[in-house]
Image (cartoon, rainbow, N blue to C red; front, side, top):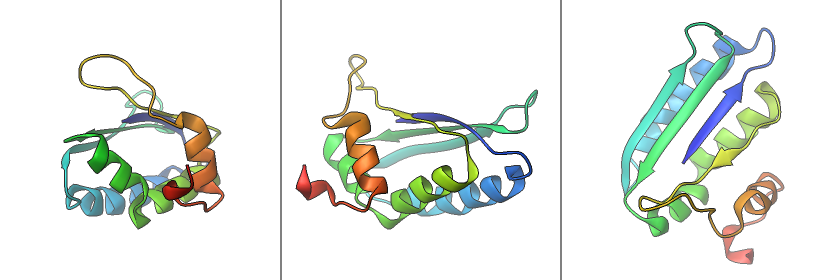
Length: 114
């Protein structure tokens, strides 16, 4: 899963701090193999989040987690509109529900409702 996010003016520090605290929590989740957060050296308002999950079940569990809800909340408040991209190991693929699922999660609906 990856996301390229642009912090709103003046919100870079707050967004980075949120990402740093969430990263630690995400790395402790079952099935998380990697969670990398980067900041563009040429444009300090641009951030990249890159996560690797053992399998789809672990990714879906992450998407039901409090950490992911906090991440979605932070992106809706501190960044410009953005999207998350889901890529399967063997080919580019869209997670079932894709962006509709993310929008529903932002509205507080549980994944079991899909």
